[in-house]
Length: 389
View 1 (cartoon, helix red, strand yellow):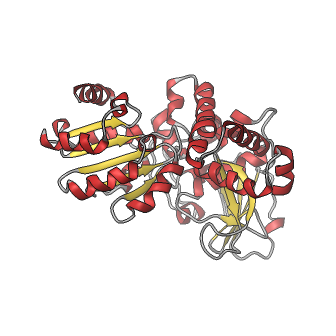
View 2 (view 1 turned 60 degrees about the horizontal axis):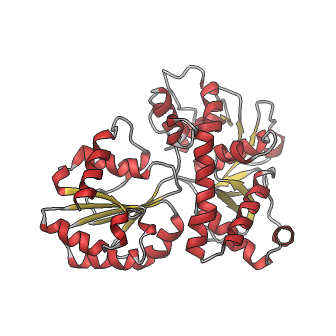
């Protein structure tokens, strides 16, 4: 355990608390058990270390990663027991999905040690969600996605801004005094602004590593797949990446991948939950997430630039950004008139020359335009929709 403490204090000393992700303020840190999920690379580890540094006595806290060799011959529940006897009050466990039978042991820790707070994270939302059903009465779950454009401006360029609701944006209330010309920053964000690790260099290599680890390790481990199936999912992601955007035809995909048609929908769901793609559904299901899949996008624009073999399609990039940023606070579904619908509002996405023709007769229709700095009437600048979280 001394090695664990030594590693924890070394990490804590190096952590910077000047910038906090949006999820930090949304978590009730007083809860006895908290789970934080999200794709690889979005900053979950940094967030929990920041909380420790800002709020806790390090002598009463311990951060561990479930991948540590310590757990080759030690159990989590035994660590919790020893930690409490040494005065510990707050146990943080990173990469919990890498620990076998993690949900069972977390339940026991919760039930046996009422004086101990446990906060855990998982890079793969798949394993976490699989186990969270067993912890539904104990753990409060939170999900975190990558940087918004607002967060990017603050982290990369020290340009701070308030969070604006969608209603604020549609009413042209966005005011950022220190941001005179947002479009040059917006173009940078679309290429490499979604993941905080872009600050550290070697962005393209690290993003490719995340993609490979997710598809070749995380998903196959969760779904009990073999290596060949993992490769098929990489092929599927490549097919989606080249599309503009991708309208699913599962029979054709199955033929291309030499796979069963019945498996393709499952593959897409796994890849979506792992943070690699986003499926736009219609409203036929009546309940969130149960509608028919209308289009499939890569999860964020950084993935498009990384995976597209030729020049990425700008229309696809614009729609991907809209869907990615707005789904954090809203249920975004396919529209029969425009590109997207949120509640009774219809949105058509395009460049600065996009006309109003598509939305004629639509009561709450908005044209969202790229390459414009400010909006008017029902015309909204695309970049402003990145200010909602």
